[in-house]
Length: 171
Image (tube, rainbow, N blue to C red; front, top):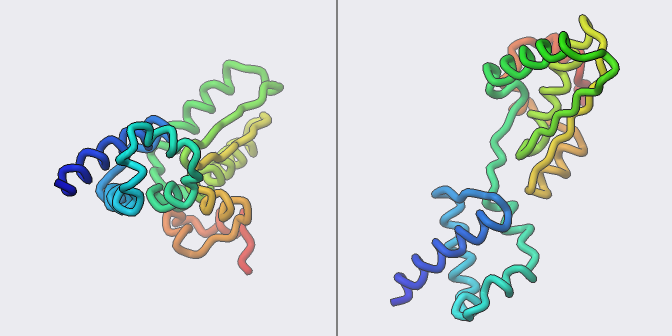
């Protein structure tokens, strides 16, 4: 009986996480969901468990289920399409207009910094103002992005060491 309960409540909890945080769970996070449900099974027996959950700080739980895989210049084809699109738009607008880009779910910032680097490189041939903002729900990732300290693993997508030398300093 408990297994059926666990399966049903885990599915319901997964829907709750998607609704509240916009996170679609996967196999890795389902293990975390099951653990959370098992550890808090008495709460899930209550008819108003969603109301109870709304009052609980789920920061650590969210940090554990979010994807933290990232590196500089990841998905280069998509980045190139975005930059080509920006170049096209720059031809249509005055150079006084500011380009604002929000990088959502950017983990520890590598994607947002990559976009900034690419825009800076475009800016060398065209004059325009821009701002890139990175967002993530994982508080540990945000802290890492704010510090801007990265290991060589974060640079595995950068074949061109000139960009590393130009935009980063090694400590």
